[in-house]
Image (cartoon, rainbow, N blue to C red):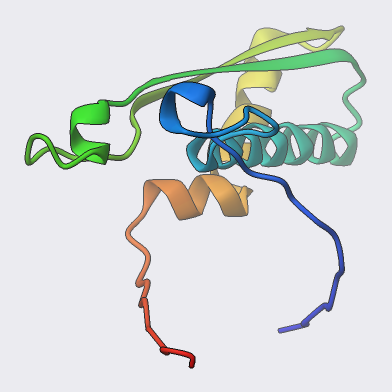
Length: 129
């Protein structure tokens, strides 16, 4: 496994209604953007590998979430539910080929894999003085 060290800033914020300044996406929007970006990239790579020309590719994401879970008001899941990715593709390839490319993108996208399968995550705390 290869490891990279990269240096950049990824801004996150909340809207004013949640005491933020609306200068960046909320964390869950960043997750959705990562999913859409990764799926789009893998789709394009799979099309290229198969010799399929893509003239345009757009992905729209929709989901639901319930802030009652986020605020701890009700004991419900605070995360995303019912995420839908809608691909619009302009290509001379037939629909069956494009569906095969989408199927491959779903099976090969690291972000799709991460958000659709359980992942062991540990949170630790270190108090500083």
